Length: 253
Image (cartoon, rainbow, N blue to C red):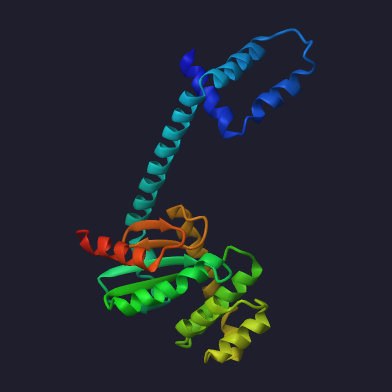
């Protein structure tokens, strides 16, 4: 019975404790005759009150196990999809294309954390001539983000990706298409050609492929990084980037 109570307690904690309220509402008034389910509810509720430390320890263990499983799943995805992740010829790349360490970033131009790490990533490439950076456009923050990603990938066809990418990352104004095309033009791209190329189904296909890769890797927000084969969610400082590159460089294979 104790194991059952712990299992029920974990389930109730996971859903915010609303299950007991729903059970009570479904049964009606407190004057209704007790049932087997109400007896179990009372035991669960009492167990939660009497053993909070044990329940919290079990929750932490369950969370740790879930994180380990998530990391294992991500590593399996990296192993199975290496070419798509690191060597897709459609992906924009900066730095040394033959570098001994590859950094992959999933990002959104409207993400403030992505903007925050953009300069650090550029500095990393400048400071370390053996780093390759692969950009994975991952526009998850709405239609304006999607427009920006399509324009940037269209600029890649003109050899202007890095310039447009830098301009978009620094941009704090409107993300309307006309304004972004003007901004891209100021970065040296042909806006008329961008307006045509951004509608190419191949660009939409690349974005969908990035979505699928992110899902396989368990990346749900931006930025999301791979330093070598190590998945790092969230923003990373330049110093930490350098440490992660050193770690990746030290890994065999």
